[in-house]
Amino acid sequence: KNVVLAGVKSVTLYDPAPVELTDLSTQFFLTKEDIGKPRDAVSRPRLAELNAYVPIRVLEGELTTDKLSQFKVIVMTESSLEKQLEINEFAHAHNIHFISAEVHGLFASAFNDFGKGFTVVDVTGEEALSGMIAEISTEKDGIVTCLDETRHGLEDGDYVTFVEVNGMEALNGCAPRKIKVLGPYTFSIGDTSDLGNYVRGGLFQQVKMPKQIDFSSLKESIQKPEFLITDFGKFDRPAQLHVGFQALHAFKAKHGRQPRPRNAEDAKEVFALANEINDKATEKAELDEKLIHELSYQAVGDLSPMIAVIGGTVAQEVLKACTGKFSPIYQWMYFDSLESLPTSVTLTEESCQPIGSRHDPQIAVFGKEFQERIENFREFLVGAGAIGCEMLKNWAMMGLGTGPKGQIHITDMDTIEKSNLNRQFLFRPTDVGKLKSRSAAEAIAKMNPATIGHVHAYEERVGVDSEKVYGDEFFANLDGVTNALDNLDARKYMDRRCVYFRKSLLESGTLGTKGNVQVVVPFVTESYSSSQDPPETSIPLCTLKNFPNAIEHTIQWARDAFEGFFKQPAENANLYLSQPNYIEGLLKD
Image (tube, rainbow, N blue to C red; front, side):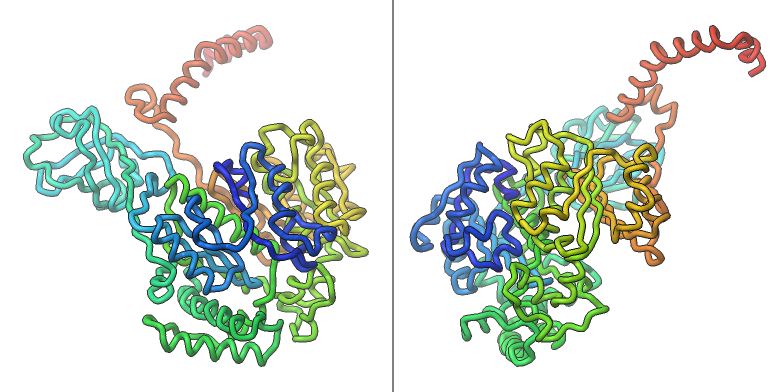
């Protein structure tokens, strides 16, 4: 879904397995009417609706290596380790970028192999840095000092060039020089002893240099893995999960199925297999029996939020493979969210058994009692934009608010615009001009008909003027609030309301490829408004008037000039006309 919305050249699907009831717990393009039909054929037309400019095809027949040479990127999910090794061997030999991903309950993994000599054209994706220079020393390891103790923001290994330097003119427009950071205001640039003496002026400019990365094949990397650490509080976890995931593959190859939910016998066998694999490994891990047992317990689990996290991550890796922008995962990423397991509910094999529901993969992880709780949850979503659409999709897949007492309230005053369609995936071209809240409610009703009658759409903005709609009774009947807003005032207002009514708040936001989440729990965490971002650095007046050297300086200079020409004189004239003693007041000041 994310790859199609991003607008790649084409997407080809391969998954001829028939749709099962449990697929409906996470695959939001499938319905009960699709059960028994091939997953890929059913999904193709619904994916095609997302972006008319991206052709969606289905690969027919058996998945063999001779059909793969036409592709630039191959992504494998839910595949046996044997099949992954076969496809990766072909991809690695033919310089085809390979990605694989797995999710088992609250555990997930992703693997990248972009071949030998993969070029990253922009490692960070950030704007190139620049700054004014106060001094450059003449020595074997020349030191650059920034003007007015301005932080340079560079890192070891970055490259810079120079402009407008007086006294060391050879540096102007020079080939990029590799730097070493000495402090927040200083860095070294190598030998400057034959460049003369620095006189004054000049700016350094960061140069984005391409970086080449050599990836190992899956077969090699399994034996000598390189891990991306996602949580430094779990530093030893990736090595253990690396062995644990291999043990799950070995168990399935032996029995033709995954371990059963909360089954002690299966978990014991998975741990034994993990020890066998670990004993043969080049780099051995210290295995935690409890962790491997938990992985076995959740092997058949599928959770929409976990799928969304890993699916979104892998989609970003696809774009990195296609464009060379941003650093790819090198090479293994293991992620878990065991903190999400309920502490107030005792999970047993009986409580996690399937009940013939679309939510069986979720029950396998959290149990039946937890499923009943979330089905009777009452949540208020403020904003139905990009984040709001993702939240509603996850809630519909989880069954949140679909029980006898469950409710989902959505508010968004905006109507759908054509520019929204590339990221707000619940909407289609036929929805342009309609209210976001109502269209979103209709969209998730198609994903999970159990939401019908439990979702209430509003168009009133949140604020003091709408407290007749979102009043005391409204908040008293909520269990929680989720913000998906795009402005600070509304965020702070909702935070005040949640503090007053003692409701939990999920706060989130995005900026390009960056995102943030804050969980606010009454009497446990601080509220959203309790902390603020550091104030933006003000620009000294002398810099602004005499030495503007950055884009923000020129913008502020232009704004000051505009106000001087058009704003301040008009305001002074109005004050003179409206205040009889205006001149006397000026003289006193």
